[in-house]
Length: 119
Length: 283
Image 1 (cartoon, rainbow over the protein chains, first blue to last red):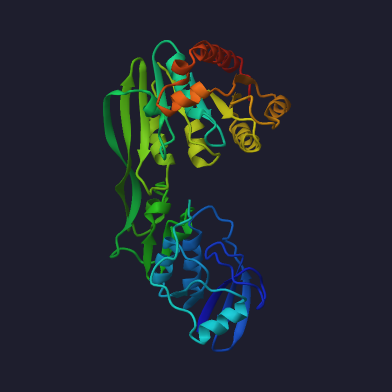
Image 2: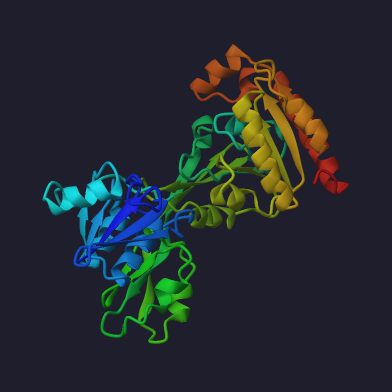
């Protein structure tokens, strides 16, 4: 399963970035192969609709689960339409968050966690 | 002549100056409040003959039967108002700027535009002042289309004053664009100067002639005057702090009614602006 974690840096020990669309980096974790890959977020400095853009990219990459801090309404709608489960309010490092998720410590959200910041 | 009143920082006195100018000038004046997210000039005008029309913005609607999920529209949209998820396109009305580009780019002609009410345009009269303002519905994020709709009502044979929204982003640029001159109202504080610098940068980019009004000019120790000197921007008026102006503002009385000496000062400033515009200076 392909899991995406929003991260502040490009390492397993990097901290979770609480922002979804404007996070500094993405960590893609393949739970079948136990493999981490990292990517800088090219959309982070965009003018607006960044959550939509990020969500669309994740759906195209076949991501099934997102672990992040907060998601706004536009990002939520995009991820939901893409069939992606969202686990918000994650904290600590990327590695810790993956472990916490795999051991069932996180709860899936059924709505946006905060207001839109698209303006 | 069309004069825009802008500021950078909010709360510096744009509306004070814009309404003051409108009240001070002899003859027919048109005052347009382009701060459609928070119009307030009408509070000072005791408007008669008030009427309004609804304003709509165009947003795309996808015909699911025709859409082949090619993704061209989503890649085209600069504002990320369209997203391709699985085999369908999602539309985000609140991100759409209404440019219509997606309807042109769609090879299947699967996108049509629908009018969505986003606010209203209000018209009223206050003595010789014709007042028009936009009022964006709560929760709407796109001010520029409504600002443009307000500006389409600009009269060719009146003195036009445009009260701009604060800031230096799209709404301010939309409000100020096509004016003959822009007055920047500031205060001599760190925030006042910082935002003035940004506003000046934007106006220079637009090749817009400008001048500065320093409000509450005896308060604050920043270097607004030095900055204006350096940039060769004329300081056209200084308004020292006055409790009377503030108290009267709070009950909807304009500066020229609170402190009548500003009537002459504002008219003099207007004449100076005319000189600057005619001479092609101030850019």
